[in-house]
Length: 269
Image 1 (spheres, helix red, strand yellow):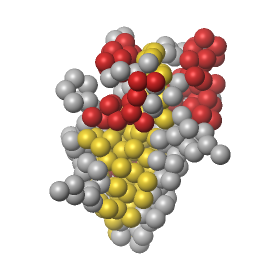
Image 2 (tube, helix red, strand yellow; image 1 turned 120 degrees about the vertical axis):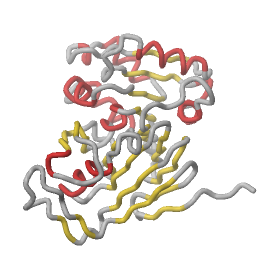
Image 3 (cartoon, helix red, strand yellow; image 1 turned 45 degrees about the vertical axis):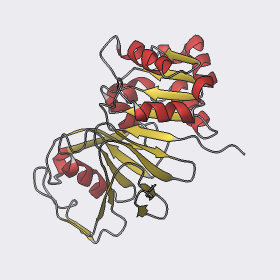
């Protein structure tokens, strides 16, 4: 039986010129010089977003890197594009607007192929908006700030590769702890994943996360939440949240999503 492929949310602004450790590691798990990478630039309004990632992945030595212009829902039924998706070893979703991803790809053959193939080994990564879209519950938009408030986040259905996490990106740079806590207060089942820029998590088939990159990962575990005032708070009221657990993890640290346990990086000295 095939194992699920890696799910790789990236916090945005990953290094594309020097080092490129995150994209390099993504390339390696996809097969290195044998890898066929499909790029989905749907979220971006920049016409060079797809070609730019094509160039980056080709510089990293992959066999093929192909940008797929899923610009409309009609495009998502084009067999010439879907055939590339079916043959890919890895799929990479660029940044931009996550609602553009969900409204364009949702309910189409593209999303069906991504879910079916990830379940049997396809590796799927996304940066910024692409990262937010990978999960079952997606942060569509929201306000910045440290305090949870009912009006500070809007949720929408995402691609649904995992139900164990909800992702927020550009986390420290844009002060998004409040909106992640708000999202978790609505339904404290998933683990909150706050990704700094140039930081990624590689979620394996056993739902173990490993951190890669130069920033931090903020893990918010609401499993033992004792109280939330979300149900009685008005839209702009601060929300009381008691009993959540928080971890700050850095490069090579791990977190087990099922056991809800964190571990530091193993020293190589």
